[in-house]
Image (cartoon, rainbow, N blue to C red; front, side, top):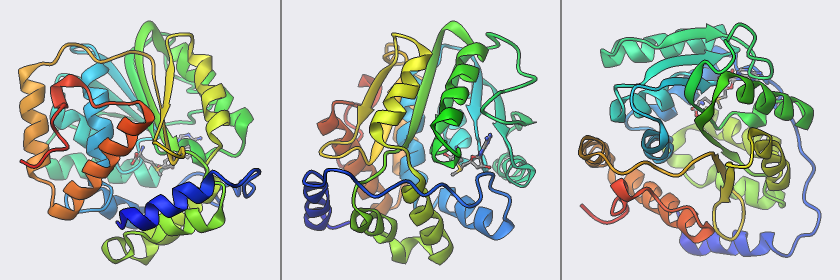
Length: 298
Ligand SMILES: C[S@@+](CC[C@H](N)C(=O)[O-])C[C@H]1O[C@@H](n2cnc3c(N)ncnc32)[C@H](O)[C@@H]1O
C-alpha cells in the first residue's frame, strides 16, 4: 500500500460534496461457489483479509463477557469467527448466514482447524426469526451490511439484533463506509491486486460500491441504544465500527493469543494490520489495552 497514493485519495474525498450513488450488491446472499471460494481463500491464514479479521477479532474478544453466548451475524465462510474463537475459546457461538453454500464452507473451516463448529443457522439477519429474545450476551456483524438491499433492511437488522441481544449485551458492528469518488473505490479495490486474485478484486469493487454512507450506518447503529458509539477510519470513513461497550480489563491469556496471531502474519499482512490500527486510531478508535503495542515491530 502506498501511503502517498492512499493519502491523495483520502484527501480528494474531502472535496466532493455529493458522492457516487449506491449500487446494491447483485448477489445479496452469497451463493455463487466461485465467488465464495475467492472470499474464503482471502480469509485463510495467508490471505488478504487475515489482518482485517484479526483487527476485528481483537476488539470483539476484548468486549465479549466470559463464557458469553455469542452470535456471529452473516458469518460467511467462518474465517472471521475462527479468528475470534482462537482468541476466546470460551465463547459459546452461533453463526448465522442466509447462504447454505457459505454455511457449508464455515463447517469446513472449523473442521480443517480441528475446532468444534459453532451452531450454524441458516437465517436472515433482517428478522433473526427462530432466535430467542435476549438469547445472546454478545454479537458481531462484520463486513456484511453492504449486502442488504436498502437502509430499511439495515434498520430491520438492527432492530432484530436489539431483540436477540441481552439488555447489557456487547455488540461490535463493522463495515465499509461508502467512499464518495468512484476513483477512491477503485483504488482500494485494486490496491492489493497482486495478493488477492481477480475474483476477490471483483467482489471487493462491488462491496465498496454497495457500501452505505457513514451517516446511514451511524443512524442505524444508534437503534441499538444509547451505549452504542460509532467510530471511523481517519480522514474518511472507509471502515466504520459501532460498539456498545468499551473493553474489559485485559486478560493475560488474551494478550498471549494476540501475540501468537500477530506472529503468524506475513510481512505484508503485518503491514496492513499496522495501517489499519493507525488509521482507526487517527479516527478515534484505539486498540484495547491488552493489544496496545500490537502495531509495533515484534
Ligand atoms: C462479505 S460476507 C462477510 C462474511 C463475514 N462476516 C466476514 O467478515 O468475513 C457477507 C455475508 O453476508 C451474507 N448475507 C447477505 N445477506 C444476508 C442476510 N439478509 N442475512 C444473513 N446473511 C446475509 C452473505 O451470504 C455472506 O455470507
